[in-house]
Image 1 (cartoon, rainbow, N blue to C red):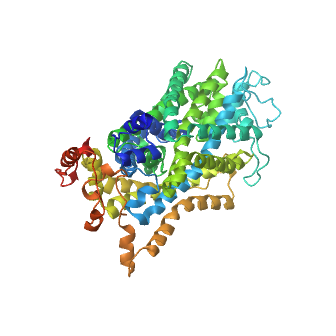
Image 2: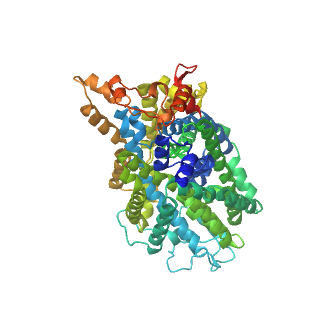
Image 3: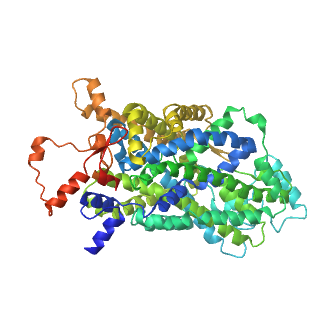
Length: 629
């Protein structure tokens, strides 16, 4: 009995507040606010901060790219981040449950689940490759240092091959500057590619084992939901910054490092007027913050109702972007060193995407003294960055399933739901460990989570601001935080952010080019599969909307539309003591006549009733004194 009382107090309940204790204990809450912030930072700061932002920065004008990048952060990134956090926190529901705000748009939540499923499948494969590199780095000489191994092809040229003559650097320079195909030993070591996406070849058993390890780690960290993952993030969200600092301190001392950093930062102001630069900046902000994945809504749903998510959104967004800029210094200090060693321009050794993290950078590490140590640190950092995002992806799916079913049995069996999702993710990821796996991974990365995210986010803004109503939503935030959203955010939510999202969509369509990997061009049937993956998440929105309209009450189509978009009766704060004002329960006289209240101490009950009488607030809503407590 004492344990139950103490548990209730930890969740913010006082003895006798059974409803609040039940809801909080069953669904779970963050142990403290630091856990939520660290989890959100780990979710937003991922592998894209290491392999995508530095490449975009030097491709789009170096330091000049920072200008549109931070403008997009202010007018699109932070406002969307705040919207999703406040949305999930107000309703204390995952990406499906929150659409009680306008049931016809519940397909947006299903679309988020589909996107998170795709990303969760291939993201853990990327983590498993990092695990593989991490394990094989525990040796005296990195196995991808030379091209004298049985798996190497005649096209392989390493920067430290012992069989090269004294003109090795010159030969490599000529090869890099020519049109002849050159593959690095690091690329051939782990990828061992087949010649076509349809030719799966054999399953790479080491990668398959590492995939199993990564899913086991994710499951164990989420075995008790946010109660266990909230403790793990103290390490997974902070240690990557320690590793980044160590690598930066080591890299800045190398010859040629300053050249690499200057190449990364030197502004090319002539590119600032290029629409492509602004499109890349908007896309990078949008994708790197994890908007429209459903993870932000899910993580915020475990917050306390009155948590200041406005402050959190600014802290997390700025931390994410600062990490991207910092990672660029680390990456290009090493790439500058490698370019100096080979006698070539930095652009000849710089790569993007998985190629930067698993080809160019590992090859550069072979040039460092005690290269296995730096390799272990680098790939351990990638593992932690990936796990931080993967935790939220898996929790998004599990929370959506549990909240949607919502009965006592599935809440008690949430661990088994987590296990089922993890096993399914492992099995679906097996084809990505074959010799054609990298082709499929890039296909999913380019199509499954591209323009579909933009469409989902745009519809979410329209549904909240214009269907549910911006005035209603602003009042909800005021009731939750104690103050309305600042005027700047109100303007961004209604006009600026949707316009930027639409710009990103148009830019994505205009800039579209068929996917390719090195010299390999994807066949038409593979690109068709990519488009089907992209459409599979978007198509959920109109399908569910049609279904909801058909099931709604009304004699005419207009009446059905009105009822389908109207907020459900159970929309609002999850806990009874927070449902004040227009969310306060209304009892009919017949219902009240059947309710009998028998306080143990009548005099005390009367005094408590008087203390709990509604107090009219400045905004016209009614609040009770004990809800303030």
